[in-house]
Image (cartoon, rainbow, N blue to C red):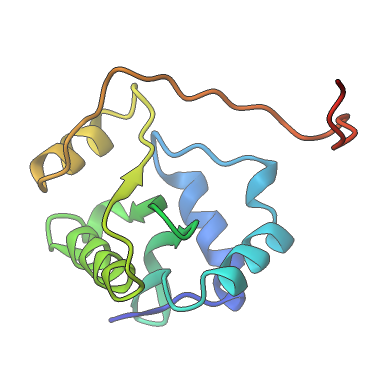
Length: 145
């Protein structure tokens, strides 16, 4: 059964994410950060539950212009049942209702299973740009001229 994700799902989600090959988690995935994300993007993220346990997740949100999907994970024994596609379709529907016309997902280059899944389900791999990341720790937040 697919239902809306809540912060009460956090421990099971991290357990799942940690077990999925190719899925990277970091300090940005702390309980407080995920709680903030879910509150900011209420109704956009989902879990798949089987026998009272989380067997799939998808985090989704938007910045008012573009949608973003993170941490799509399905336990191996539940794969090939269209669960990931159903969760992604729910997210895309929610984004469309919010007036968001395009969605992105970041997939690590060496995540072969993830790259196969997204290519197979109609997502187009983009090229021509690079993604850079930096922690905000140690920055003042002010602009220097």
